Every structure is written in C-alpha cells, then in structure tokens.
Length: 178
Image 1 (cartoon, rainbow, N blue to C red):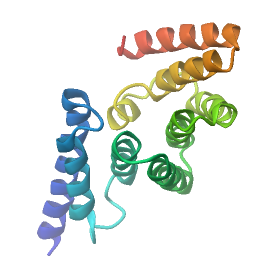
Image 2: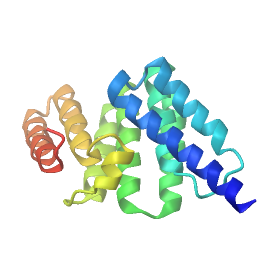
Image 3: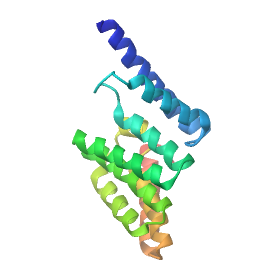
C-alpha cells in the first residue's frame, strides 16, 4: 500500500512538472498545457497533502485566466491565494498575490491590481528562491514588478512604471530570467 501511495504521489509530481514545462514550451493557455494541469488535478484526487497544491492551483489559474473568463481567473486566483495563505509561507503568498493582481489587471481593476503587486513584491523579499521560480515559471517578484509597471503605465503613473520596470529587469537578471 505504501509503495502504491508513493507511486501515485510521484505520478502527480511528474504531471505537474510536465505542465510547468509546457507553460514555457507551448504557452500558458495552450490546449496541451491546460490538459496537463487538468490531468494533474484528476491524479491528485485522494493523494492528500503531499501534492504540490500551489503548483497545481497556479497551473489551473493560468489556464483559467488565459482561456476562460475573468470570473474563472478570479475564482482560481482566489483559490491559489487561500492555499498559499493556509501554508503560512510569505513568499508563496506573494506569488499568489501576483496571480490575483494579474487577474485584476486583465479585468481592468487597476488600482486593486496595483495594491496586489505592491503586496506581492513586499512579501517576496529581495533574495531569489529557485524552487519558487521553478514552481511559478520564473521569478514571481520580477513578474510582479513588470505587471506593476504595466498597471502604473495604464493609470498614468509614469514614474512608478519606470521604477517597477527597472526593478523587474534587475530582478530577472539576478534570477537568470533575463
């Protein structure tokens, strides 16, 4: 029974890794990427807390926000934030807030998106976290900064847009994402 459990956990992790690789290779909203995370969700049923739920929910959020609707993106980013908050991991919460902010940005709710990006960069700190970058397809801090720059630009806060863009470039270069 223990070997079967370990095999199931490994299968879910392999499926999550496959989905994460497809994000870069095929795109966030590509059919095969969305299907990979849907399959990971199916496989994780009954496996329990050992599953990397944050990676799973992040992949589901990306599929929802890129291929479905604002409401689907909002719902899935809220689930990601709830899971991250339950984990009590500040950096994971920061990455989830970046997802919430991106959803709000795409939905045109700019001032709340800006607040989420500011909170995300604060929670993500200044040091790189290779594991977090692997799980969230690149530096979540650099992504929060660049999305914050776009939000600032849209709201005509050009000085903040320039600062955030510079921070994103520095952060991406430091993380090896540039």
